[in-house]
Length: 87
Image (cartoon, rainbow, N blue to C red; front, side, top):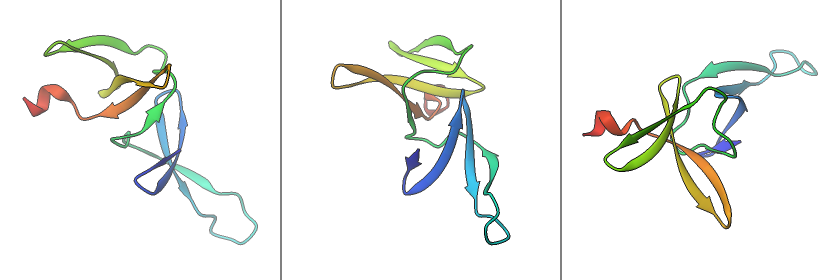
């Protein structure tokens, strides 16, 4: 996925920066990073819990907040800042 012109790998709640290979022809490596604000996923990670803050429903997984949005007729989930720390 691409967020703010940066490419990331993603797997069930874990985000990775793609590291260029050190040697030509080698495979890239991946570094685990915090969830980038603005990342959109089709599903929340397994084990995410629903939490309502100021009347808005979020899904929380490993301290990452996902807010559901409609994309056409589909629901997608966007990584957002912790709404409780903004209050």
